[in-house]
Length: 355
Ligand code: SF4
Image (tube, rainbow, N blue to C red; front, side, top):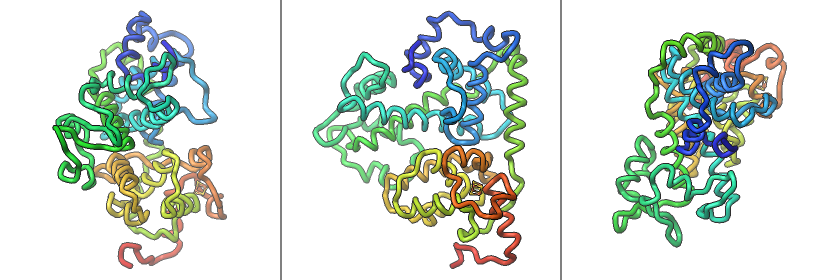
């Protein structure tokens, strides 16, 4: 196992590395004494995915070894399969794919044109396409990439946005033209499909028993964060300072870190905004940013609005997004509570949508 497998545990070579290591996952999970680091990281993976929209460890969290990282992925898949939480599988797969996307875009940029094979532990475009069995379906051209039309249609799947519709694309010789950034979005979709495949797993009873404590721990952390709030008023003037700052940045066209974007989107989804309303409020004009935001909103929302609350003040602080704190901030631990209190205190408020 190497760091490539740790960073991209869904790759075929990573699965093979686990197999070749001859490690018995059931033994790792059921080991006596302290919880195995792979199980600890598996729990963190699922918690971060469902609450924070990423599977990266927090900056101030523990550093995990390669074996713990690689093994934590199959363990996280079992944990998410055992959770009694609607939408958990989809949110988990989306967070894993989103984290992989950030990493592979960085890797491609650091390896020349991203097409050359390297012996190192950076992922190349060539190797990712090969792993997804897409080498024959994607062609590098002078100014863009050509994607075989059948592959394109299966990868755009539930992408919304008119730009992704086939009628909006350049099509020649059975190939759909996409930019490099669009190809990366398609690869994120391929990663999500790979990660979600076979989920939820049918987990053997002995492993289910051995993971029961971890499952309860995860379920209680969602319960702690779950809000019964029924906020349906949109009044940006009463947003907590952190959300006001993120909203200003996005309106100014500033790039937001993925975790910050997730925080803003899940906050807005939690107060009942749908994708169109989020785009209107954020004044998003750039089409690729609009597509990404829409994608995020649709994954964060479910029938009951946001199933998992946006990050707490402590998490926002860890991201560096807790800014411009005011007196009310000293009385709460969650941005949603701040907003609810601010609305309650101010009585009748005009909804932004009724301006
Ligand atoms: S204390 Fe909480 S609500 Fe206030 S700015 Fe920081 S993260 Fe936002």
